[in-house]
Length: 218
Image 1 (cartoon, one colour):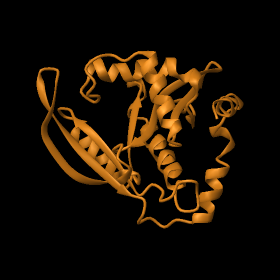
Image 2 (cartoon, rainbow, N blue to C red):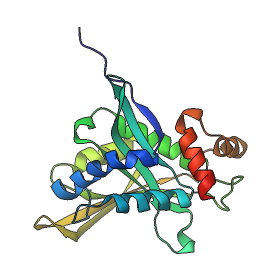
Image 3 (cartoon, helix red, strand yellow):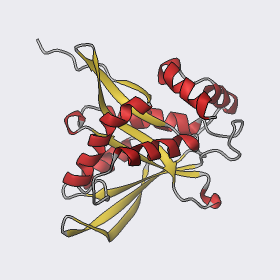
């Protein structure tokens, strides 16, 4: 009899998670074109990214599972503003990176679904003036991976907005990027419910450590 796959938990990323998510990202830097960074990143880089995302009041999540009572991080996802100009304040981009052993198990879909739910809560009636209106995913196209990525994003409510040919150079070849877009503005939304979710997110997304750090940094 086959055993069921380990339960996956999605929660907010904490400072203590940085050491585990850094090698996941660096795998995509050194071994793939799915990140267009050319050199491995340091812990300082990842800490700065973590602080930037949270300073913008945007979600940064990790997917975890427990093996022999020890938590293991399977991947992470976060949102960041598409451009720094204030005119783009209603548009964010989402990024998802999974441990190579965690692909094909639905972990990315779970991360993205909760990420989108949290972004929808940032709307009228919350502490952001206009809320998040548009969500983009700008994905490098690797050989043989384009169809799978397109299927992933189309199944999660995104639309294919087209291919930019040969806009990046990595690993000795020109890399295309494909853009996906999902409009939150057109989706039905309960603004009062969204405001309540924003003020009091699910308990398991937070930890006492995270709350204490936020209070000290305020």
